[in-house]
Length: 84
Image: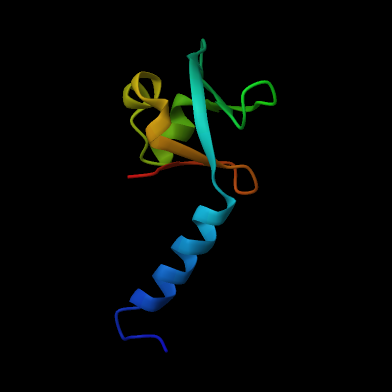
């Protein structure tokens, strides 16, 4: 049952989103953005994001480079999400 503030709906979306999220294990600065490596060691996938993409997602690029394990990636939506 949804409450007036929509909190139940938000919780369901958050749980589904976390199920799809893969942990970022490393990042590398590129000329126009950041490459994010995710998955298991030896079987990593990667996605690149421009700095403009990261700003639109409200992701701090310097923090992503310094501490990538605080972030996850949703391959399907092609989004970076802070795990904390």
